[in-house]
Amino acid sequence: MPDINDKQKILAILGEVTDPEVPVLTITDLGIVRDVKINGDEVEVIITPTYTGCPAMDMIAMNIKLALIENGYSNIKITSVLAPAWTTDWMSEDGKRKLKEYGIAPPLTRSVVPSDRAIQCPQCNSPNTKLISEFGSTACKALYQCKDCKEPFDYFKCH
Amino acid sequence: MDNSLVSYTLHLADSNLILAQRNAEWCAHGPILEQDIAITNISLDLIGQSRNFYQYAATLIGNDTTEDSLAYLRTEREFKNCLLVEQQNGDWGQTILRQFFFSAYQYLLYQKLQHNNDNQIAAIAAKALKEVTYHLRWSSEWVVRLGDGTAESHQRMLIAIDELWRYTGELFMAADYEMEAGIDVSLLKDDWMKKITAVFDEATLPLPEKVFMQTGGKTGTHTEHLGFILTELQYLQRTYPGAEW
Image (cartoon, rainbow over the protein chains, first blue to last red):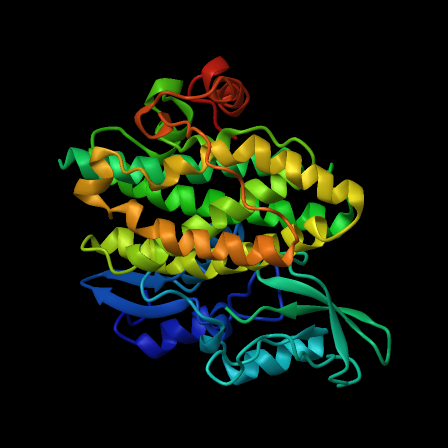
């Protein structure tokens, strides 16, 4: 049994759990993990869903449990909270960099950009892109195409 | 247990679930792949919202109630969704118009509900508002594209308006439980009309004449369509009670 009061250790383990839909991102990169609490001998992981209908959330909760069990924790509780509502502004800079390398344009910052239309191509960095569809392969993405290198690409929507 | 809060939460859940089910009927039948994905993505958002409300209702009701028993084991008369969302898909234009009317309403509703006295209702609304903003933008653009499109698409939108307008009045006629646990929806009507008028103007579509508005959905008196929807939606749990997979 590891030291249950070592919160940093637990956060480090959660930092290895990846998103099932976008496997280059960890759940801490995404800002899904809001807090970890130690209640006696229980580890409580507080998470927030990205989109309300995101089918990956159940799997993420299960993967958190598995990761902690693998590391010797046994009494684990996952609590899902809705408020404050998740925003892409919580995505780490490291996460945004990894997304771009993966070929998905990272979300713009809500407070800086009035609309999310000026999206940079993740392949050639051209800002000369066009929206093809408001909805992409998953709820969190939209489909764009670069007018310079012609590559279609996913954009992780500002939310 | 606060009965009006339970009824209100179920009303919010049911409207989302039924529209989600309608939109999901488009899966693999959309006019083009991107729009097939769009309408089913919206469906997924609405299912997510309905789940949040059902889960909350289940905790309010207690006993063995779960989100699943609320969705799969209640009868037609127990559903409190508004009539608009149970109307048939028709052609793409009718589906778009139904979504536009409802998203414009939900957008205004959730803006108010995010400040509701009930913390859980407020939290669900605040989260859902972000998704609905997208639905409204998408459906508004489609109304303009079809209304101001070809002669045929324009004509089809006129038919869709004629078909659906009579179900919009109910959105703004509050049931007792809405007045007690939610908000006075009649106060949303002016802003809703402004949005509809602005988009219809751009779409070169006329605002409808005053017509008799159909009501009853919020208190369980539905059009004939809901029974068919539930027959399909609840088939598995009705045929194999308690089935899991």
